[in-house]
Image 1 (cartoon, rainbow, N blue to C red):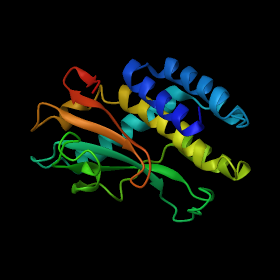
Image 2: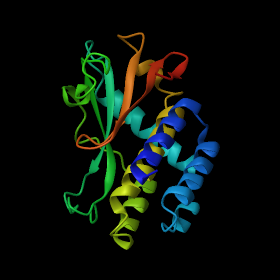
Image 3: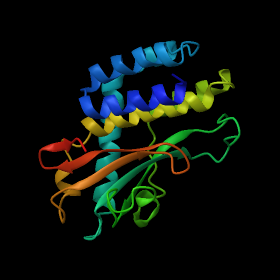
Image 4: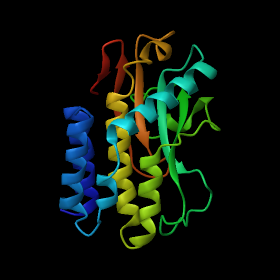
Length: 206
């Protein structure tokens, strides 16, 4: 089984199992060891994943309170991308990957291939500043042959775990107009996933 298939299977497993932050961390490390064994994730082990979750939650609070969702938004896209404009597109090296938040009036079920490209609410300019994403981005220069696979596995997996666990204190602000919102993440020009539906009970698997 090739890396792309293994990565896809692992991300779908994360989404289905909805691990807490500690279990999610272990699952990510185990997946790295299996799928990209040459990636030395020693620097990741020094990261405080609980602190990473707090950074993510604070960013969500700041974004939604300063720029509330329009009434017609039905889905939220957490797009991963280079915020430094320094990434080499061919290798995936040189940039800093963070998350940008966008809203769409379409659901993944109605436009499965491009629902996340139909911006209605664009919080561009409010990119995350999450230390873990910066650390992983900086590590890519040491793995020129694996950088894109690391992006697809590690950064997407971390985003999924944060989405599963990060809405508890702020979900009400996202659900002012809709009883549920589809939540997705990934790369606009690459892999993308529907993580679930955000409701008052939390993230429900798709």
